[in-house]
Structure formats: structure tokens, C-alpha cells
Image (tube, rainbow, N blue to C red; front, side):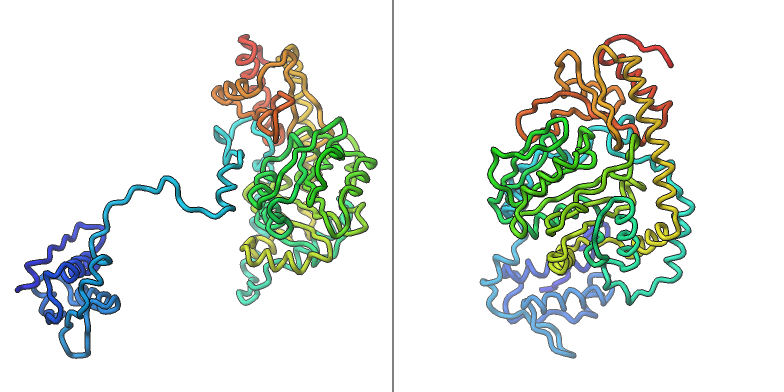
Length: 485
């Protein structure tokens, strides 16, 4: 038997010569075409017969020896080993397999499949997509200098410190003065996103079957994280002051709220309601997650201090993000935890791999310490307020008979409700198709939608873009071509 006659190699095959030869020899041995005890040609001889490099044959022989098909010794030709029949099932060419229709998944992954949270909007980056900062207004040159400066001074053996002390301290000082948050630096965890903070909280705090209260309507990412952890998520209705106490619901293990600017309505929770909410969480047994996603942007008065600053018994976990204050692609959020949880949460953070770039952390520390962060926030407050007012005025001018806007005291988006009881999902679909990226208020309801309206972003869009988008809205929703102005 001339082995080379049983082997056909193609240099055009993407698998490569080594993989082809290994597979074909494996099949020949397992099928009995090459019997047990047969002595194969030397690597030099077979390489010459196949017109390939000797390394190709050597690597194939070594792989088959590692799998137990060949017995090889130095300066000797390889020998086919026994027990061929036991290997035949393994060595047979793999049949073509159809994708599994019902793959075996963990309970966590199965719960994710049931979460009704779109991974992206229907369209791209178009007006009036809500919740976005205007990256065009960000001081990119200053930020680039901070990144370059850090790159020049980085010491790679410091990578094991996942929460950079310099940024923790800068954040502590900023949050104390500007948001009324009381914490030590080691209570602050730096994470890739605010959603990562919610995932970390869900993993560390929730036992499957426990109750979590969330606002209804509210932020769908929170419900997604808690449901995936096995929680029974209960939507708590809103009134004019935001989240109510939820007395009719079962006692919660965790309460998720956005008291500074309720998502999506923008309502600000007053001090009396905040005190009620704190009273609903038993110290050491239940927790409140305060998501202060855009608390930097308050326009009509001084912003109310964070709920965390009222807590004297360590019940509040405070979530923040730089995606709204800076740009979405900064990919940094943070979590302020009570002292009793600091050590445990940092260990959980490491084990879950929720670790932010240390390079970006240190650049942001410089950006804050040098005063650039606060300067940017102050400037964008003026810009975003002007855009909010421009959107509100345009809605009155072009759509006053169809939509009534609720003007929030802060934030980056507003709600416009239909005056005629129209279904918002159909309107949102038609607007997206026309090039205006809005979101239906009903899509943010946890249970049966009670409210219908449109969520409109104003922060990321210049006044000319806002005006053009509202004219398109008027054309779609009224059938009338809106005049410029």
C-alpha cells in the first residue's frame, strides 16, 4: 500500500494542509483502511510523495500520536496503535448538524429570553432619539490630552487595582459637593456602564423568587437585570411626584427608583416621598437602588440632593454614569455602596469581570481634577435647557392640537402625550419610518400600559435639527405640511 495514493490534499482548502492530512489519516485508521500495527512512512518520505513540507507531515503525525492513533518514538517511523474499533465513532467524519432549535440553557439565560427589552432602537442615530448626550459638544481635544498623558505615565504592574484610587477620590469629592452623596472613596466601584452596576447588584443581592419594586413606567434595563436574576418584578404606579409607596405589593427585597428625574417622565420626587421610600426598606433586609442617570442636568432650580444623602442606615445603592454627562462611548459608570457591602461587592465585581479600563479611569480622574468635567457640565446645562425650550415651543407651534408636552425641570428628554387618545406604538412606528426616532411611552410599561405618548430627546440635537424633526412629525401625525419656523 502506498499511503500517498489514499490521501488527497488541496492547497485551496481553507482548512489548511495540516488539518486536511490529519483528518484523512484519522479516517483511514478508524475505518480500517490502515490496519492496527501498520508502520507508516517517515515524515520525510511522505512529504516527498505528497509534495508538501516535512513540517506538514510532522505536525499531522504529532497530533494523531497525541490522540492515541499512532505510537511514535524518536528516530523510528510511527506505528498505528490497536483498539481501532473503540475509536471509530470518534474518528468518523462529523455529520452535518442542524442548529439546535431548543438549546440547553441555564435558568439565567432562559429568563433573559423572556425579557421584553429591545437591544437597540429600530433606526440609527437620528433626531429625536431620547437619552443621548451631544458628543459634538464634548471637549475632545482636552480629553485626548488626558488620555495621552496617562498613556505616557502608565505602569503596567498597577493593572491589578481595578478601581483606581485617584478616580474614586475625585468622584467622592464631586458627588459630595454636587449631588449630596455621603461616602468614602472605597465605597465607590468603577464599572463599564450603569447597566453593569445593576447586573452586579442583581447578582449579589437577589435570591430567585424575591420581590423587586420598580417604577411603572420605568427604565426597562433595570427590570431586565432583576428578572434575569430570578426576581419577581412588581411595577409600582406613579403619581405626580413619581414612585408611590406600593402598599398593596409584597414587601420587597429591593426597590429601584429614579428620584432625581423619573425615567421616563422627568418628575422630581419631593423630600416627603423620599422619606416614605426610605421607610419602605428595612435596614439590613432590603435595599434601595437609586439610579441618578442624568442628575447633573437640572435647569429650573438647584437640583435636589440625592436620596443616598438622606440615608443614615446604609440602605441605598447609588448608581451613576458618565454616558450622559460626557459621551455614550466613554463606557464608564459607577456604584456607591453602603459600607457593609463594599468588600463583598468589590469581590463580586472582580469575579463577574465588570471591570472598566484603568487607562480611561485615570484619564477621567485628571479630567475631573483639572476642572474640565464641571466646566463641561455647566456649559451643557445652558445648551440643553435652550434645546428643551426650543422643542417645547416647536411642539406647541406645529402640533399643539395633537400633542401636549410635559416640560421636565431637568434631564435630556420629555414626554408629549396625545390629546385624542391615539395609540402611541403606531405613531412611533410611522415616525421612525419617516426619520424621527422617538419611543412609545407604552413600551416602557411593565404591566398593561396606562399611558400613551411619545418620548422625545432634545439634548443631542441642535435647534435646527429639532425644528426639522418636529415639522416631519407634524406631517406624519396630521397629514399637513408644516411651515418652516
